[in-house]
Image 1 (cartoon, helix red, strand yellow):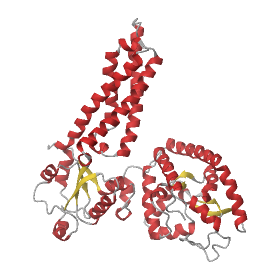
Image 2: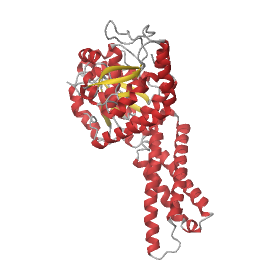
Image 3: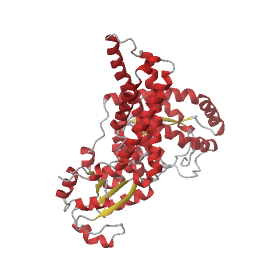
Image 4: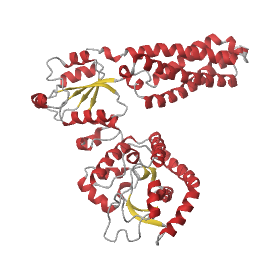
Length: 472
C-alpha cells in the first residue's frame, strides 16, 4: 500500500519542536515563580518541569493542533487552544494530585499541597497558552502563510468544480494555497480543453503520482457524473492515507452552508448530523430561557420607550400579531412592535420591500435597529420559538416557497428563532432567490446544531445589530 509522505507535514514537526521548548520554558517559569514561596515546589522542580510540558503537549496533540489544516485556520486555532488549555489544567490537576497523594501516603513530608498544586497548574496553563500562541506566530512568520495552507486536487471540471473555484475565489480566509482541477470522467476529459477552469488536462499518469508531484493534502470528488470514476485509484489513495472528500461535504465545510443545487435525498439520509439528542434539546431550552430573561431585563428601558413612541407615532395597536409557521409546520402567533400602518396588507400578504411606503417613521427606526424584534422574546419563553434558529415565515409564503424551493419544509425540523445562522451570514432579502440562499444556511444550522454554534450566532448577532447593513 502506498503511504503518502504528505501525511506528516514538516511544518507540524517544526511547530512541535518549537512548542515543546516553549512549554518547557513555561514550566520552568511557573515552578520558579511559585518556588519563591513554596520550598516543596523547588524540591520537585525536576519532576514538574518534565511532567507539565508533556501533559500540555499531549493536550495540544489530542485537540488536533499539530495538523496542517488546524494550523492554517485562525478561528479553529483560538477555540482549540482554549479547550486544550482547559484540558491541560484538568489533566495536570488529576495527575499531580495522584502523584503527591501517593507520596503523602508513603510518608513523604515534602508532598505539595492541593492548594499549591492548583496555583501551579493554573499558572502553568496560562503560560502554556501563551507559549502555544507564540509558537504558532513564529511558524507563521518564519514559513509564511502559503506554507500553512492546504493543496487540494479536485476530481472534476464540470459545474460542481466550477462552484468550488468560485467559492474559493470569494473566501476571505483563503485557506488553500492552490487548487488543481483534473478531469477524470470521460465526458469531462473530452470537454476539458473548452473549460474555463485551470485544468491539469487529461490524466496521463496514475492518480498517485499526480498527487505526489503536486504535494496534495486533500482530494475532492466533484464530478457531475459518477459513472466512469477511477474507483480503484481513489480507493488506493484513500487507503494510503490521503484525505478524500465528497463534494457536498467539502462545500458545506468551506462555505458553512449547503449547496442546494447539488442536494439529493440520500444526503439527508447518509450524512452526519440532524440528530440532536435529548440532552442537546434540554441544553438549548435552558439556553433560551436564561438568555431571554437576561435580554428582557437588559432591554426593559428600550422596550418601554419603544411602546410609547409606537403608540404616539400612528394610530393602531402597539404590538403586531401575526401567524407564523413553527416546529414541524405547526402555526403559532408571533409578536413584534408594530412598524407598519394598520392597513399595510389590505391588498393581501406581501413581502417587505426596500424603502417600503407602508412602514411608519418610527417603524423604520425600529426595523433598522432590530428593536421591533424584542417582543418575540415572549414567544421564546412560551416555547413556540428558540432564541437561535431559522426565521419563522408566514404560512402563506411557506406554501408558495415549498413549491419553488426544494427541501424548504426541512427547515421546520428545528424551532424557529429570533436570529439564526442565515441572519448573520446573509443580508435581509424578500424574494424566492433570497429564500433559497437563506435555506442553504438554515439547513447547515439544522444539520450541525450545537450549543457552541448557538453562542457563536448570538455573538455575531451583536455585530449585525451594531452594524445593521442589511436591515429593513
